[in-house]
Length: 367
Image (cartoon, rainbow, N blue to C red; front, side, top):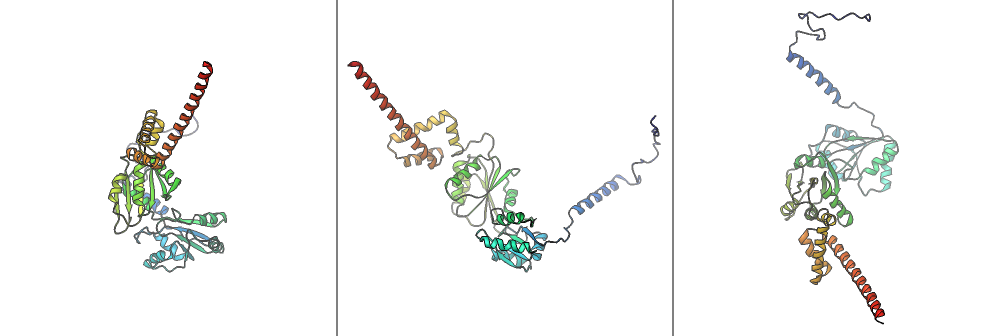
């Protein structure tokens, strides 16, 4: 015995000693539990208490189209801020007027000078509360402001987030594509190596890619994506999200290019579903990889290049013909043809040199 009282069987007619009120039925118990849970949630979600926001930079999300898509906290922040930095003061003023907000607006954008940045940091250091907004959505996502936030952190100033609308998350929720994993690409480079590399990355990525695109360049981008994506890869063009003419069009790159061939207007968010296991591409990221990885396919391409050269086609014309046949980019094929020509020339020179050497040796033996 260890000195503690031994357990004795309880009277089955006695109430459970661990149950405080045995007169409550099951429904009342559940209701009491729900009330406790609701109280816990209420404590977690209560409005933030008023805090000292001197020397604070607030990153404020604003509507991407519908002026009603803004949080109460964002409205309060814009009202209380000493200064609101706006990418375009005219657009932000429309938002403020709609919600009855009177604030001091100052232009701050990607082309603002270092002097303007320093002026803002001086205001913050002096104790001012500064709010940063973009034309639409969440600042710093394909928008200016990163340099300001970094500098504010480096100087020990407080930076806070006032979250809200974003075209990225809005598009992911309505596109009907896999959204567990995604990569935000922003705007593609307009041309050159960086654009080609970005398209190849999208083609290979297993995560859904989210892009912003100009309506003037959408058709060109869809056509280029058709060259590097598999024939069944799904895309979605989300246009004018949250606005009157909101539109979501889904399909392959070729189907979407045909749909929008007459042109398009408005804000565009383009989604490309990730690559599935075993999917074969149709362009640089697909067929070219197959040609490089499979000797029989590589030999087939080389034989076709030789046929076109024997037919007298120039490198440019041969590249265009092969692009139509394979779906590979002309630039890639042009380089491949030039490499093939250089290889053939080197082999020809080697054969000539070998032949000359053999001829010299034969003549020497005869003498």
